[in-house]
Length: 126
Image (cartoon, rainbow, N blue to C red; front, side, top):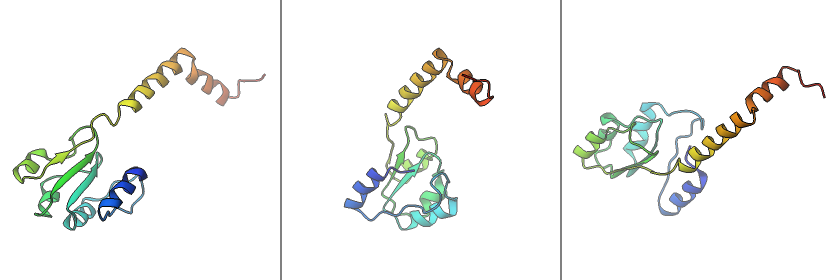
């Protein structure tokens, strides 16, 4: 899901269309192609496969911006052949990864999982 703050910034500069499906869903390839046909730039998520078929659906496509650290979901070779620049968002997961690491450390150090299970099983009586 694209954060609303980012969409607000984009809408100040351009017309923005967002796939209307469920926020935890992935648009079908046919929907991506329909959207790309009328786009200047595609803003994709890691869950969306952007391959030759998608890129060739709009010969006027000016760029692909990937809201992810890497490019695993984008056929960068094809984009390069077609002269389409591809960008990503390096560092977007740095804070989240650090937060998760600390959460796991604290869960182990304070027996959080075992305590949760203890309460769920109804063994906590005091």
